[in-house]
Image (spheres, rainbow, N blue to C red):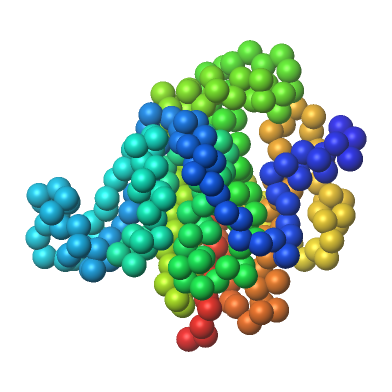
Length: 285
């Protein structure tokens, strides 16, 4: 593969721009994203104490008792066009919210929805100047999706005469359907306050300790330009991305450090899922 074509491929997943303005997603954009959702895609809103009081009457009966901070109640919403009103009113709900999660089976198709939620949260906590965090979030989401897609292709022993990238491009809808059948999900979770913003991306395709180590090395690599990142990579024509965008996490965290914002980035696996998280601390403790 020519280097220039790989740059275009990576650019489709990751465009880093410190000058990016908070994008305004239209109602039509959200409708298009919702139409691409699978039947199992869901939105979950974690209620704070005020939300527990406000929405107590619509919680399941077993969740209407005394507020328990260790067992926070959630509102679950299936992602379809019926969820549009909730999304359009999201900024009104954030005052009642401790966190938000999306569970998606083909998350790149819902990029608009992911960015919409991130932007609403950043607007709510007064941090719209770090909107380029959307690029980091989508890189983590895309890598989680790639891992699930690769796992499904291998598990189903699919005959892929094309390169893996071409195969997924051509048969994306069918592979996403297999992810639903095999319950291969990606979750994106946001927790936020005026002091802290945390986003966590997880999937249920497990990493080996060696794979996790390599990903952490990319995300914390001491590089000064993207050319340095390219020089570290060996690209294979038939593989679904090389994770080059992880190098941009280092650029992002360095940018935050220059603004006196501390960050913590983690990648780890349990026996049930793989997690990557990025936490920003707006106030020093």
